[in-house]
Length: 439
Image 1 (cartoon, rainbow, N blue to C red):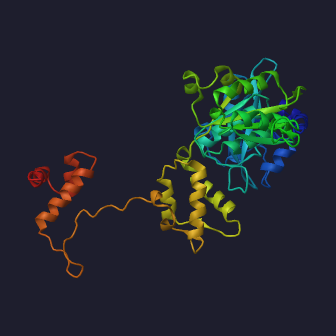
Image 2 (image 1 turned 135 degrees about the vertical axis):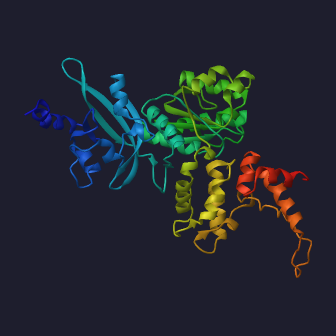
Image 3 (image 1 turned 135 degrees about the horizontal axis):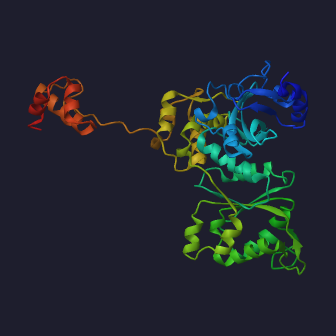
């Protein structure tokens, strides 16, 4: 009996100490033993021992690093240190995002013999169509989600950077749901349009009689976020005169209601978001540098929808389920092709609006290109051979003129050289040059 076989019961018992699925891997990717959580999650009714990890979790025939993903096992062996990666894994219940952590196991001589792999499902995002939360599975989405997972367990201030409509508030809610403050409140604050008179009253609250119209005490949003997460949306729009007050709050973690002399302790996790380039605003003197460093401890760029082409069909399916939960609305292939060729300046928010309008215009459960806005549909190409004949009279043109029109059109559109074009037209290069000489 080998040393490994002798120690397997003990190793399995150690793995069972993990509540998350965990396995012991050989350096050849074979599963040597697995805990109960792994067997129940990925077992698919079959034993997992001696199977290849990538075959069980990915249904691949090659390791992850040969299939376009990072391989945490290879990374752990190469570095000799624990590694993490975000993957999409198959389960009998469907695909899911998984935070994979690997740790090398050494023998008494310091050689790496095995790797322990722990898989923690990511509950705030779905790799399939979902009724709520973040949805996506493409590379750009997974890079963003991996950063969310990295920072969620800390108290670091997060700055979400992205164009309008990319879902910054949804990502902020995912960070809140993944952190230790998940049971506390999530309080969003729209910073655009906050005047100086409103800023202190909205954020800090006020006492009764603090100013004209203050008929009763008001609890501010800072106090409402106690024990939870404060989300400052479009923080780049805060006027320079108000930024010093926000900075003081973040530095001292204390505030006073308007009209009160008693300082209160502020206890919240800070997540900010903006579509603006804060570094440029700092350079121009329109945003305080010290405040910028306070709020940007961990920046997370959010990809635009045009960078998430792989996710578009999944997002369309998900949004249609959310917009029309009682109907099974889908896109015709031609309508999907229209959306795939559109740049979506308004990102996911614009996609939702387009689908909501189209689903109302469609009498059946199939959305066609004519149900989409005009800007989403490709322009109808002009007729290269317009006819001057009446509708009842067919157009008759001399063959030479038809040939010249066709040659002009194809010369303007063909990307290759003229020798290749002559071959595609089925004529010699000499004949080709003779025909276009008069054009």
